[in-house]
Amino acid sequence: MSQSPSLNTWSEALSGFYIGWLPLGLLIVAAIPLVFIALYALTYGVYGERKISAFMQDRLGPMEVGPWGLLQTLADILKLLQKEDIVPTVADKFLFVIGPVIMFVGSFMAFAVLPFGPAFIGADLNVGLFYAIGIVAFEVVGILASGWGSNNKWALYGAIRSVAQIVSYEIPASIALLCGAMMAGSLSMQQFSVMQAGPYGFIHYYLFSNPIAWLPFIIYLISSLAETNRAPFDIPEAESELVAGFFTEYSGMKFAMFFLAEYGSMFMVSAILSIVFLGGWASPLPNVGGLALNDLTSGPAWGAFWIIMKGFFFIFVQMWLRWTLPRLRVDQLMYLCWKVLTPFSFIAFVLTAVWEIYK
Image (tube, rainbow, N blue to C red; front, side, top):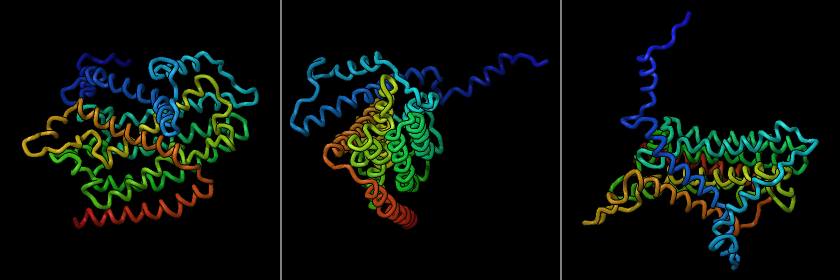
């Protein structure tokens, strides 16, 4: 008969939960503010989208609920929570329900390997970059389940378009990120920031220290727009053609989960771009003369500030492009991927390898 484990056995098992000198409980407490920051950023990403689009179109945007419309997003969330959750009679109920859940969970899974500072990282995997790339493929399952499970031709068209688009653009995006992995000599997301930190600030960033890095940087920036279905690659959600794309039949909180997943993915790809090419949590300010700006703006709290600000900047760029560029056709989308970005990503890969060998 099996015996219950002794106290020493449990102590040995629990000792594995210690990371350095920080116990697991303290690490969780330290991560709580970052979780709230992430949720706040995703929730108010909608507010930012409205205000930025309003500014670009010379109008005010939401102004009624709260000062400057700051509470409009909270009002929308309360409204969606109270709306009736409608499931079409002819829908595949299991796929219809599980689709938005997969999308929502998938968009947040990559946060586990995003380093928010020297001490703030959920899991410092030695294959963290590979894990982050794989999360995008995981979201495809949710999109296809939602489109197929809706039993609606517009939803199915949108899902097929999205799957084809994401799978295609994963190739140049992955190759571009592998260029960064060659520069860092590691797939660890934490290692990217460590390698780009230094007293001269942004001069240490790969984007400024490596003349080849601009090519994979631009390739991933374009590919990330397609992977998150953002304009000018919002073909899966083309309102004039597909009503609302793969979430046409959704309402209530399931509809809100798609929006949260979209803005979660926007922050995820923006953070990855910042970590791989722009130092992540490393301070951009240099030590100049007697001013130790880099030393003063480095540390755990400053690290979280820098990576969040860099992520917000690229989210702003995504919103800016949405209200500036027209939507591409499907043939233009695939031409750009297979005949432009993919060949140039291989060129960037070879040039990066040559640079790293002979620099």
